[in-house]
Image (cartoon, rainbow, N blue to C red; front, side, top):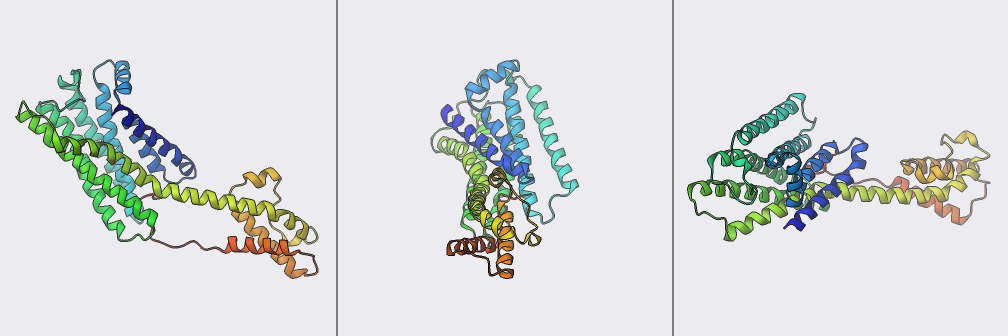
Length: 338
């Protein structure tokens, strides 16, 4: 179990790192923030992390409170992502302020319930449900928030599935929907078990209930992080492949561009690039397009210039790459670029 939790934490941190380039370009910043908060939340779960962190905080199970508070913050961030994706004009300032205030209010209520109770100093706080109403009230703030959001997000995903046709987006949304089902299952089992533990002293979560609890706890985060990151990852890989092919073709066509434009510099608005810049320049496709157009203009205006069959084939390849149109589809709910 501990190994699985460490593996999950690593996956979430890797997903967060993978979103950094997009965030630097101003894309998917809410997603990056969510992944960082969620990865930190999951990192605190393994006992080999929980115990030394809690020791630094005074051995009062403050780490348990931090875990629940971070969960609420992660839920709020995910809510922002969903609402931004569903709102054509994005979230209003009032909506963002309301989300911030509600999140802060829930965390403050949790702080009062946690630090105002003595159950928080138990040695095995995370091992089972503590048979006390004050614990149930504290933990229920997280479970109810998770359940409400799982239903809301699940409904949004079902609506979005009807609008999407791209396979990778359909898979992404389906994984998120599966995660919502798992989160709802986890929240219902947790709340029910906590209440039964108070009502019945000999209550134990066993059998199918325990299996469903463990599976939802482990599989929901995996489905969530993969679903949120799949479309962005596929698009990133496709963009990287396109840039690589554009860069290779740009490198090959540049000598021809230099030769043909040497006698007609007035046709060129493209800036010269050093060999190093050819390998590092951003958006090589834009430079490829301009050089291809200028080569075509030079050939049309001065047909006497010698151009070999190999070079003509290279020009044709550049034209195919620069004239390829991207398919149009509905913007996906998951992987929003705002």
